[in-house]
Length: 327
Length: 165
Image 1 (cartoon, each protein chain N blue to C red):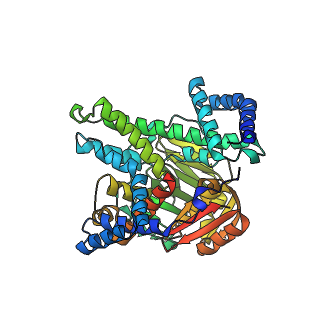
Image 2: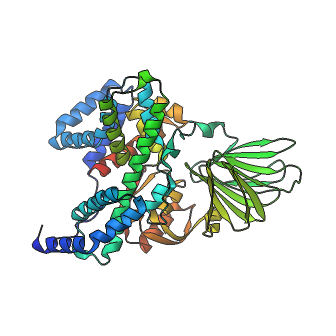
């Protein structure tokens, strides 16, 4: 028997891409009449067109099934959406990356964690895709934001509070013995008097990494000091110290992604905030181990470097999609 | 399936099934579930067609078994989240037991279909396909441009197409 290639390495039929285009145009809600007639003409033009449309409809079966389940109240639908919107916890995903196994009863952690929508618009400082920004704050502290990050500032006579809504920041805190400097996420808070540290907020947990001196981390009912070079994950339930040296996770500040034996899936996840298109990695390719230093500001070159180092194939589909498959 | 292939599968099952069941039992703490997942793992082996090229059978089995574990736990998490949310609803909003079963199955199926999709794309897709919002409404509620939402939708649809293949 021949060794079959992973299915995603087959070229995507342009007819399927056309069917997707029509679906999105028709989904628009107020598709003008000529879109409808154009679609009917396209469907009538060839058997292959109708077949691709059917394949797409079939692929979406689970969604239409949920929509047609008799709902006794609109509340049912919003519950289902909230449940589905919660991403798998990092512990679960790590299982797929073939890293350390974490077995824990985290069953209820998903509930209603959906972030308030449109939050980036109301934040004080934001960065967009592929953008990093360094600002000097009123107290002289220096703040650097990674791509796709947003932050709110609240400085008063008694405290300096910075709320990280998404992404990551590195702060070089100006010393002020009477006004502690705190970076808070929904998962907990990191407080320092004068030091340098990074906080990254992920959907289910946040990471604190101390680059200089020390900080006080508080999450759930727990408090813990972290010292230079140390890091810990935290969420509303508490703190989980990280034993690995995580300092390479702050390398984005210098515009590089420093990868030491991470799964390709994670590397791509980190590159995503630097690309406008959508990167999709096949499950087989996602498990490949990666070593190396990659330029964030030239994500295209980073992809090419990855393709040279690993048995993968990268295919671009227009400006909105890039597929990565194992070869 | 060739006789050769059949013999290879049989040998794999004979040599490693006990070990795999034990490995899964350590993860799950339940013999029955471990046996089910071990069975599912061997079904995946059948489908993977890589049997003849195996260098390290246990590493290969572990990768497949981890995917089974992931699906199992993810499904349980989803069910618990759904039941918990339901418990906070008034009696009048509770679905019938038959509907509830359908909903739980459909949630698991849709979640698997969307597995691997970036959170914001997933959110846009659900708002469109479950809530039936227009792209303009989704753009407003997510604080993004309509062009971005349409790009998300294309990406989501292609993802679904590829996942269902």
